[in-house]
Length: 592
Ligand SMILES: Nc1ncnc2c1ncn2[C@@H]1O[C@H](COP(=O)(O)OP(=O)(O)OP(=O)(O)O)[C@@H](O)[C@H]1O
Image 1 (cartoon, rainbow, N blue to C red):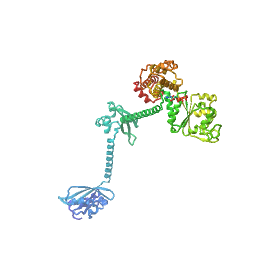
Image 2: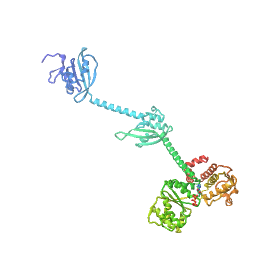
Image 3: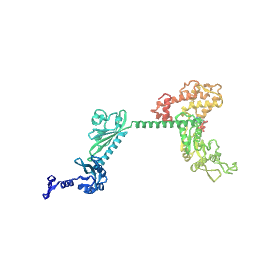
Image 4: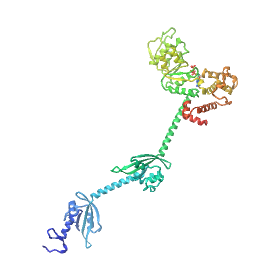
């Protein structure tokens, strides 16, 4: 047994030999899970435990710079005595990463080397990374929650408020500090809120939507449950959207749409009124306005139109109107009065003839009205008077668009739109065998009924005033109707309709000596008519202007309609104008 200093003896080996301190420490450091490595002042490894050897290949006798170059500068600093403090540095081992702690090794205040202790940091780093990830996520969530323009409430499963965002503070006019930590049930009981989406979610266990009024605002709140892995509710997230603005914008949009519609209708009406005025068509009664509207509508299509109504009501005027507003307005409108052409001539007049077709025919032949109207419109007035042979030819044209001149065997294609008119009852004529049923059906694709003057009393006064003025202008004079004369004219039934009215007005203008047309100037049959039949009140003051009278008539018509109908829509329907027009006019006359 060798002589040893007892101070160096630590214990006994398993064989019973005394154990040296050096061996003991070697065994001790090898047993540790941390790496331990010591270098002398020149940087030579003088001690490296198992972890250091396995992880960094650090053996006694190698230079630290050769095995852990990233650690060497820190160690060198401490070997040179520049720093007495411990330094920490991450180093990469063969399989794991380590956190190294470098401390100077001093013996009796003298630098004898440096010690490095390595702790495995892979796990820690992973955890740190995860922490960082979660911290980032939390920051993102915070930003999202705080910057959301929708209010957000987060409550726990007991309905305790955990958090609310700034938008919620603004929307509800509250401070987060006043509600966070409080239970929603208490807040509802304290009448801070009338209903709670959170409580609804907790009650139903599912997502809920509520419409609420708060602080004068309209809110839509949506509560959503958050579940854990065991399907238990852990949180309730409630979003609140202030829809006050959206709601009012929506309403504004609807109002704008309505105004746009109103303008559109008014413009359409003004356009139509102007069209009628340009053509000097007077229309005040709903039935007449309706008929004119129909005419304007059908003018744009190619269909055949049958204009029905008594003599003198203005059927010809309707044909003019349709032509003027049709695509064929720049092409001819040829008007034929079927009753005015002798029966023997009508066929050749309408369909033309070839040379030598009959005695007295022009030698070169002659085109008929159909050919002359090619591309345009043929208005067959008094169609009921068309003889049956010509009805057959007309039917053929309406079926295949061709005509055949008299005495010819060649059919010709003509592009003609047919408008027809009659004051007769065609249906009855068909029954009596005087008019072809097939032609009747071909003609009445679009029938328009022009009412008699008797059926449109509202038009009477404007028509009388219009034609008195019109003829006065024509004859370069000034005429006015006395109240009595006017009342009497209004009471007269005008069996000859507008034509009779026009004739009478011209006669009065021409024949009356004075400016004022009085009762005595009226023809006896007219003067004797019963004034009580008039639909217009008889107290018209003298020297009233035409617009004033028209307005007055319009006002009384509206007042009458107001009594008869339940609402403006019904009035509009009955008077043949749009509802906005009724509203505008009622307002104008102070009737609304
Ligand atoms: N609403 C009206 N406004 C102004 N003038 C009108 C109106 N209706 C008809 N007239 C005028 O009355 C006259 C007779 O009209 P029109 O010849 O069109 O009647 P009609 O129904 O075709 O008659 P008929 O059946 O005898 O052919 C025309 O001069 C026309 O300008």
